[in-house]
Amino acid sequence: MKVLLVEDEVDLAIPISKLFSSVGWDCAVAKSINSAIDLLERETFDICILDLFLGKESGSMLIPILNERNIPVIVLTVVDDVSEKVRCLRMGADDYMVKPFSPEELLTRIETVLRRVKGITRNRTIKYENLEIDPFSMTVRINGHAIFLPKKQVMILIKLLENIGGVTSYNTLFSYAWVSYEDASIDALRTHVHNLRKVLRNYGFDIISYPGVGYTLRYEKSTESV
Image (cartoon, rainbow, N blue to C red; front, side, top):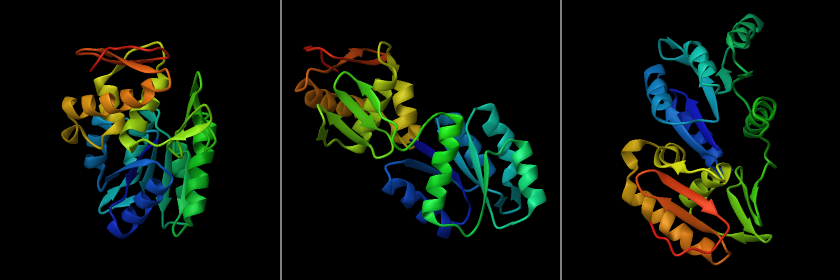
């Protein structure tokens, strides 16, 4: 799962992003509205955690933009005021949390919003034949046995599983598995897919390449290469 954290206080952004990493979530941090919009243009997110006060900017300006992209948003603020809470919720925020808060409460609020908006829970698994992935813990199991893979390969596999029967494009994989397009490259993607394919072939799965387009996951033996 990928989270957009819009927070200009480094002392708060760092522990929150580490919290998300500890449960297997990918987190991109934006310190301003413009940087958040830039990330939204280039990447795909499952949820946004939004600070209301970003220097002289009001984080609430992002709420309509997030709504347009169907990205649920949880507002974070030091303002414990009913009228402000009502304003944000009426603008389209899905939840409103007052600082300070406990890490467990934040994770629980996120789970609740995702369950309500997207039907995603911490116990949600993606399955195909005897292969299953828990996107929250980033664990992969085949025939009930844990398969240890690098995080990027797990994220690539998640997208392939979500699109069984179709071709998952390079851009989809880049936007989900890489923090930014600047860090992504087709060579890096090919290397990860090549290594992932070698593991999966031991269990009867294969990743089929469509040069210039993307990849498909199939439950069969194949000798195709990247």
